[in-house]
Each structure stands twice: as C-alpha cells, then as structure tokens.
Image (cartoon, rainbow, N blue to C red):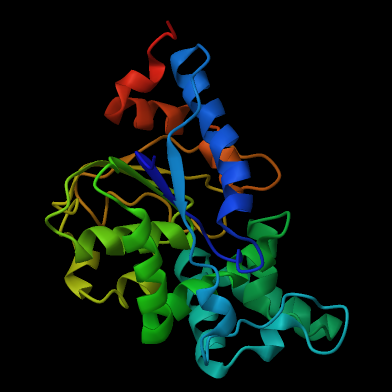
Length: 287
C-alpha cells in the first residue's frame, strides 16, 4: 500500500523498483525511528520507477561515466549539455575559483575543464560524477518522450491512498511536476531530498516557468519540506524557500562521504520528523 510514494533520482536505469525498495524502506524506517525514538512497523512505502525511460527512448542516452577507455564522459557530451553544466557551475561557485582551476588545467595540460575541477574541489568524494548527473535532469525537462514516460510511471504509482510524496534528486523535480500536473490532488506532504530545483537549469525549463518564480507550495499538497546537505553537488543551489514561499528548509544535514546518497537522506531524523508530521500513526506503539 503506497501511503508513501518515493520517486528515485538519477542514474538508476540499470536497477528496478524492487531493488530500490530494498534500500529505501529500511532507510526511511531508520529516519522514522530516529524521529520518534522507538521501533516502527514496516513502512507503507511504494516506489515510482522510471529509470527505463533513460534506456530505450530515442535521443535520451547519457554518456557513460567511465574514463578507463577513450574520451572522458564530459568530452562525449553534446555542446548544449556541456554549456548547461558549465553554466550551473558558474551559478553556484565563485567565478575566481573556476578561473584559477582553468589556469591550473592549462598549465598541467589536463583535459579536465576548469569548472569541473572547481566542482570537484568544492564537492569532494565524487563531486564531478554527481554533478554530471544534472544532465539527466535536463534531459527530463527538454525531451518530451522522456518526460511523458517518466510522468506516466509516477501517475501509475501515486494512487488515492498516497498521502506523502518523497522525491530524491531528479525525483524531486519529477514529484514537483506531478503536483503541478494534478492541481486537484490532495496530498499531505512533499519531501524533497538533495534537490536541484533551485538551479536556473531546472527552473527556467519547467513546463510552467512561473513555478520557478514564486508560486509557492503547489495547491495539491498541504506542506513541503526540503532536506539537503551543503556538500551535495546536486543540491548545490541550497535552500528552496527563496524560490517557493512556504517551503520549510530543514537545517542542513551531514550525509558523510556520499553527500547525495538517498539512504543517508532517508535515514535522517529531519526526514523522519517531516513524514511523522503528516502520518503520526506511524509512531503508534504496537499493540
């Protein structure tokens, strides 16, 4: 029973719904237990899986991240994708740091662009790879074939029983789009984890651009809670309340070495508190 429905993030096309649920359920259970201080029963969570949309739709392939052979992944991007990534980096990082890294790249004769070196310095432990996943976010917003398939997967998963929608990474954009497309839905809570919604790359390409300039919390949901790690390269734009009045941005969390990991986000007390605020019965003591 999907009283809670999760919407996964980027790079999950080689997995599936069942595999992801095996990670999401216990992680969210930990977050709930941290929030209420006692064991909770099995979490009533389902997952909207859309990863297949990035495998077979024409024109949607994402360059592989392996650099073991041939050109590095950023050298296989088309020009528009490359420009958008650089633009996103310049939006969130000091211009001076990018120029310094570009100078260092030129001197060292390395192929790594200065803006990616700056990203890696600012977001250590795989920052370049996670930041590159923003391309999949852009693909969802600009490719109508991909968007229709992703949106259909979420529509099928969000039934009338759903009261809480949790979106991680690209999934936060997809979940937001669900609420925009279904203004008559009546959900209690939207939780966004490691969200790129604050980036211009995302806001400027929303099907309804006004939603990126202060429409507030979508009418289909009572509350919106945002959880982010300041070291998360996908959530690099930070808090969301400056763009959507009414969003409750939690104090930044610490996800450890993998700042973008969904299991780290789900297991946080802040996430558990948000869900329990909408579904207090989850904390009821077992009889």
